[in-house]
Each structure stands twice: as C-alpha cells, then as structure tokens.
Amino acid sequence: MSKTNSDKKMTGSKGNKMSLARMRTGQKGHIVKIGGGYGAVRRLEALGIREGQEIKKISEQWMRGPVLLQHGNTQLALGFGMASKVLVEIKGESR
Image (cartoon, rainbow, N blue to C red; front, side, top):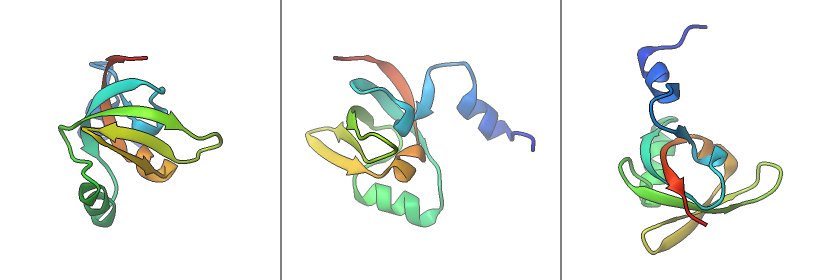
C-alpha cells in the first residue's frame, strides 16, 4: 500500500509529530490533525479537542488504557483508540 501526500506530511521528519497515544507523560504539543470518521471528529470537538489547540499529556494507563490530558484548565481522559486518532506536533518536554 502506498502513502498519500497527506500521509507523508503526517509522518515526515519535519517537526516532531506523533499520535497523542504515543506521546510521553509531560509532553506538550499542538493538535495538527484529527483522524477518523465524522462521528469521532465530532465527539472530540464536543470535548473541546480541536486542531490548533495546545494540549499536555498528564498520564496514561498500562496496556493501552485511557490517556489523561489537559487543555486549558480542563483535564479529560480519552480511550487509547481515540487518542491514537489525534496527531500532535510536540513542543518540548515539561516535567
């Protein structure tokens, strides 16, 4: 299967881009893209997760459990599958 131009941009070496699920605890970044279907995108938007927002990963659970994140003054937990659909450009580590 070949990659499309948008896939190449998402996984390219320019910048540190990765899914929210793969981020390390304490890392901050800006949301670049939200993958998935219409329902997944709308559900994340309802929670306040939108492209361009800065988020910070607070913690994660062992064995692909929920991911706790913070945006603004709000903390919320996303399941591993939903967190995998959020592409983030990493800003740096903050511990």
